[in-house]
Each structure stands twice: as C-alpha cells, then as structure tokens.
Length: 589
Image (cartoon, rainbow, N blue to C red; front, side):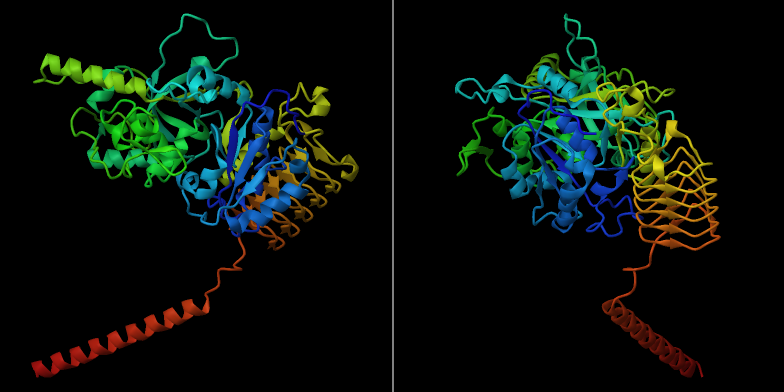
C-alpha cells in the first residue's frame, strides 16, 4: 500500500541502480525481458521497495538507472504494475545511458555523462534489491547532524579566503549472522573509529549511538586476497597514531545505501579507474582521511577547494591539474606491523575492540610529533565517511527494523517469507499502525479458496485471483497473482510467482517457481528452482535442482564452424604425429 509523502522534501536526489541480476540465473536468464528489478519480493516488484523507501522520506526526485536493453520492460512495469502505479506522485524518471551494459561498475555508472548531467545536488544511491524497513528520514537526520555542512546544504560559497567546509557521507551496514543466516551470503570488512563524544544526550530513537567513522572498507573477498598476499593483515602506522582504538567488523554487509555530497561526482569523474562504489570510492575516501599525501594524489584537495592546484573547466567547475588515479599512485601496504591470524580465511571472525599500535624505534621525537600533527590536520580537512551499523537481534527478527539486500534466490525466498509474517492492515486496523510493507489482506481473494483447505494466514500471503482447490495445505508460503493450486497439493515454505499452476497431489517444500511455470500432477520437489514458462513433468521427484529451459543455449553456426576448425586442426596434428613416429621407426631399422 502506498505511503503518502508527509514531510518536506529534503532536497536530495535519489539514484536507484537496476542491475542485470546475474545472481538469479534461474529467473533472469533473459535480463532484457525479466530484469532483476521486477522479480517479486512478497508479491511486490523488487524495485518497489527502494522507491517506497524514498517516498517515505519525502524524496521525490528519483531516477532509476538501467541498461538500455531493460528499459522497455521496466517502463512497462512502471506504467502497468498496480503496486508501482499506486506509488505517490511525482513518478520516478527512467534513465538508460547508451554506454551502460551488464558489466558496468557502480562507480563507472556515476561517471557516465548522462548521469553526471542528472545529478545536480547531494544525492542518495540505492540498489534495486534493497528491502529497508528503517525510515530514510532517520538516516537523513543522522547525516545532516553528524556529517553535512551548512556551506554545502545552503550552497554558500561566498567566502573566498577560507576554504569551505564540505559535507561528508553516510553508509549503512547490517549484521548477516541473524537468527536465520543464509549460507554463503556476501560480507564486507569494515573498520571504524568512534566519533567525538557529545555532552548532549541523543534524542530517543535516534541513530546517533550507532554512528561511527569509516577508516577502512573492502569486500571480504578482497580482504582474503590481501591476507594471502601479505601473510597477515598489514596496518599502517598513520592509522594507529590517529586512532588507537579501531573496531573491525567481518560479519556485516554493506547495504549499498549511500548519502553522498555532490562533490563525490567530481571525485569519481577525475579518478577514472574507480570501478565500484563500495570498494573503490569508499575505500580510497576513507584512507585519504588518515593516510598522509593520499588526498592530494586522488585530487581531493583540489576538488574540496583546499589546494591552489585547482583549475577552472569550461563549465566553471574546478578540477585538479591532471588526472589522478588511486591505482596509479605508489601507495602500498607496509609489510611490518601486521596482525597475524587476526582474521580467519573464512572472513567470519568478528574483531571488535582495541588495536594497539606497534611502537617504532629509531624515530626522532620531534619528527614524530610533527608528522602526527600533520596527519591530524589532514584527517580534519577530509570530510568524513560515516557508517551506521544497524543493530540486530539474533533471537527475534521482529525486534528491529529489517534491512537486507535480496540478491540471491535464497534471500529472495527467506525475505519473502519473513515479510509474509507481518500482520496485515486488516488485522492491525489502520495503515499508520502497520509496517510499511504490510499488505491489505493476507488472502486477497478469499472467494477463490474452496472449502476443506488449510492456509496458515499468520505466515502466508495469497494474492489476487488465486484459486485453491479442496484438500490443499498451504503453510508459510507466498502465492503470486493468478496462480492455480490443484486438489490435494501440499505447499510449505514456497514462493510462487504470478500465474503458476500446481497440479493435483503435488508436494513442494522450500521451492521457488517462476512466472507461468507448471507442475505436473504428483510432483515432489524440495529446495528446487523452476524457470518461468517451464513445465515440470508429472511424478517428478527431486531435490536441490534448478529446472531451466535449454532455449538460447544451443550452439550457433559460428560455434559449430569453430568446432569443425578445431577438429580439423587436431586431425592434422595427429597425422603429423603419426608421420613422425614412422620416421623414427625407419631410423631405428
């Protein structure tokens, strides 16, 4: 159900990145017709959730960014899908840059000319697979109080003698080790330091107690590569001098919710080798706050108006002389001062606590004090990148607002089933008292349900125009619109997309069935995925299988020609080998 905009627009733009969905091979085999952004989560299109997140905070300047090949499918959904058409006005814009393809990195997207022209103010970046129950207004409040600059917010650059104080950023990380963890879910390594303490107690319900400053950020996979290369985890002396107490998290995940100041667009444009936001933009930005000389190499001093090396472009903006790239710089991790065995290869060890600096010998006291003062000055001039570490309860998933990225089939099933447990608006009595993700009713079309059926309404969702025959059992399931459930079928912990047909006496457990797929009579499937428009033959019994059509996987004429050429080359090679063997035999004789 749409939630009306009730607060003033904060003046931020929102970019929602709609990727190809390579992590859903069963359901996005044709990403042009079935893009990831339109996969259903609890019977709503995936992209509905970040859109609702923006509207609840009063952000109405929203742009969806997708590859040109997926533009038509997403535009059609925006015009016809009832959940998307019921969102408040103004409707989001859809941008499909011509140079955007399925392999373009998130930072590379920000560097595209059409995106550079679109972003004209501070902005919010979201993935299309985000499900966030936490209100964006609270995140914006935390950012404005802890990181935003009045100079940037008011666009006041009148002071020419004093460099302006620029706004920082805010990101969100959440715990993956919940009451129902997903095996193999991606995690990120995050190192933070506490913010200066305040004498004023934070308002009740604010996020301030969970806000800290990012000093190091990288995906766990990249961390593993570093550990193998360095035989340990190298830590720079400069970091430990400024921040003797560092908190390290290894089981959290970057939610890819970023509140960025507008100058980040200049930073990305000037550093052409930045590929991703999470690893490259955040990682180098965080290091520039404490690593001496790095901000100049990245061009940050010029971008932030703190250096005389800035020059004017034709559009009146400033940019550093030359093009600096983090990968072109000579910055390397030191080989000394390592923490061995601190982080396991699995990336699941949670290091939270002090990391004490290693005392160096041979340094002159005066030199060390001067260097430390310079580093502290550098730390104060680089706007901070802050992290909101979302608290979670390992026992009760309903005690804290849900924040989760849904980028695998397992997460698609788990989060859909979790949202199905939310009380409906009908049960609560009013939309204001219900969760923003609550549906109007648990069973949208009760007339389609025959007598002598069992549907556990407390943990199930049944959409419009669904017919359920007698002697059917549906427990902890999400059933999409226009589905048909045959007599005697038993469904448990399943997700059915729109138009699925389930035959008589089928037994389905922990399965995900794609749009308009059909299960033959008497099928018994456990933990299976079925592609859209696919027929599973009657009496099929299997477990942990992905049913996918071979359509589009056939060899092309070019592939066949290449295979023929390879066979001919192999044949010629064998003949030559045979001739060589005959020559050898003749020589021996």
